[in-house]
Image 1 (cartoon, rainbow, N blue to C red):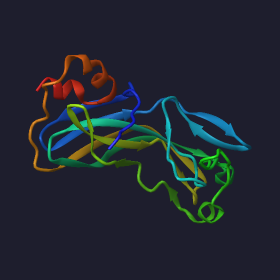
Image 2: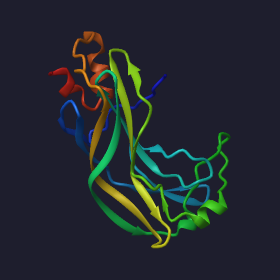
Image 3: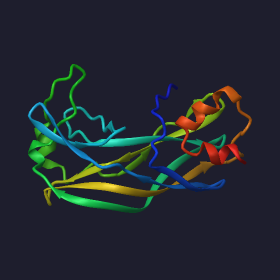
Length: 194
């Protein structure tokens, strides 16, 4: 499996880690309103996109965490800090298709209640040279249709529960890769000191 990653966002802090969980907080930067092809959306530096074509374009932040051999992980939200901003959901920008064209799934736009329904999710475990890594994505904005608001997250306190039988994360790494690990793996400093 190939995992593409961006450097660890400075607003991610891993607070605690043991053999059963990883706990931390994501502090999201200030959002800005962006116009795209006659539509509007909110975005922030280092944001990826919740990539469901023709559905609302939602900014996300993804991180990688090193996990023990033979484990996976599930993320749970412990606490959040957010601001509700009044919006016109009908003018929210959709995710473009592969050719860059903007079109909306009108049925979806008229029927969803909260999008996306979850503000955090894990991806498939991958290998980053000497580490098994778990991608975790955090949603920066949720659209709530009934209230006509965008819930803009300022911080998300999370716990990743490790599943499976855990063995310690290897801290025997190639020295030439240390700068790469520090840049890409949110909990590298913790796992490298054990």
